[in-house]
Length: 244
Image 1 (cartoon, rainbow, N blue to C red):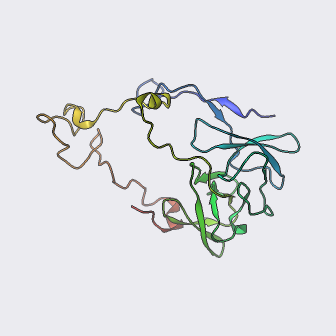
Image 2 (cartoon, rainbow, N blue to C red):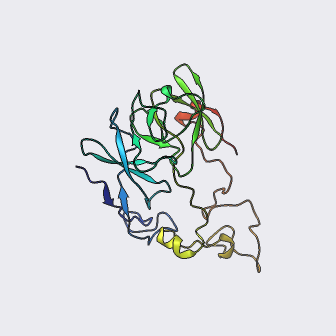
Image 3 (cartoon, helix red, strand yellow):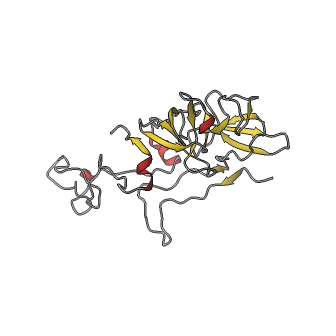
């Protein structure tokens, strides 16, 4: 039987030489990584939820599922899932929270999460706690799905998604610095508090503002500037852009 928990190695935002490559990272608490079955490989086999577990690496709860042959898997839990529920995946699975089906088999208006982009690659979209997308309609081989951001996007009918709303909730305010350090988030210094050689916002007499359109420490535009590649392969799949 495969291991379902492995120790998550620390990265701390350093490169191969040990230099800081990503600022404000390091020093988090030791964690186990749960191996989650995003693909829902056990098709047409019904498993039973034996526990709903907390995972420190995500804000979604995990369902610990045991199958009749003794195989055990971690799955993303639906908000409505509870211990003792039966879950399955496949073409003929019932339309019930926690079950996984192809989008072509799910009725219009149904809430879904853990959506695949490429068939059999596993769920990649709408996986955070408390989120759900809605099936809006059909266009031949394509299914129109409204994402939580407000974006309307096409998906192939054969990709799988899970029925319902993902369990858990967004993280919200951490309330104290110690919780940030446990998560591996190191302190961040404002640019306006630095000297002008360290940040474009730095310098000035007394408490002065930015004095310019906001920039990163390397002089690139920041805050609100669109960074999506205009020639990205998936641009033709977007019917309506997300809310600005």
